[in-house]
Image (cartoon, rainbow, N blue to C red; front, side, top):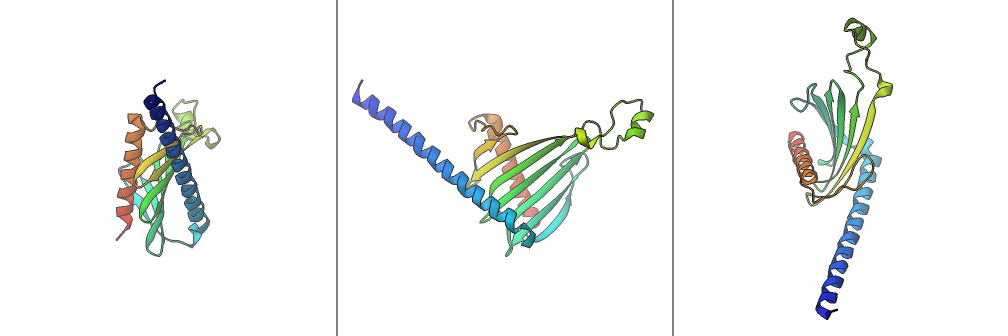
Length: 182
């Protein structure tokens, strides 16, 4: 085999390996910062607000500050068939992690047994039948570097859908931060 081809292939694998090591290092730092915020959350000053327009039933957000620096924003969007909760984690004013929980109800939340009887519906809201999925989004310098879906499977960042979702969440995190910073 030609020496140039061998050197090219080796260079490619070396660069790929270094990139993978860098991402592993970044993820390790993100996990450390995440744990620090979770540990200190109760000591942070917080502000809350109601949110409108993001879902059929509205939402609620709480921002947590340490020395006037935003560290975390917890948001819950409510709907009649479920809710979505996201926690946006910040360090040095930049988003670094989003933890998302998606809850799906078996029936509209207002459908108790009596409402189901009146409507001749078999389904009524039963919290024990609620399903919950978790997704994790990792960012470095406002760029999505890793996504773990509800099965903890790493998602392909080169897919348009993954990129668009990551950018949408980044914009949402930025907009929420603006809502809370005076």
